[in-house]
Length: 47
Image (tube, rainbow, N blue to C red; front, side, top):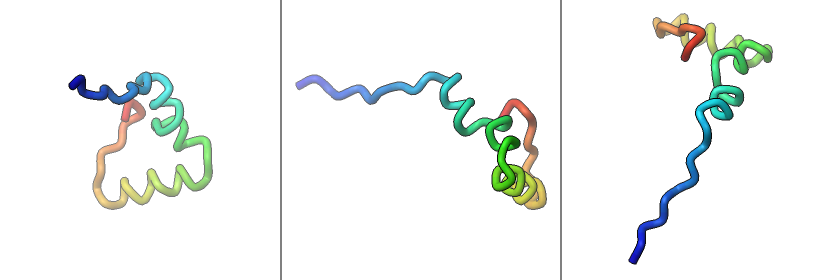
């Protein structure tokens, strides 16, 4: 029996939805980034 291969979301679509710049667009996203930074996470624009 063949195994089901899950759909692969393109990296561009994923980045546009969950990426750094998408987070920076909203107030809540900026809050989240600052929260992670305060915990000591290194957040670069590429993440």
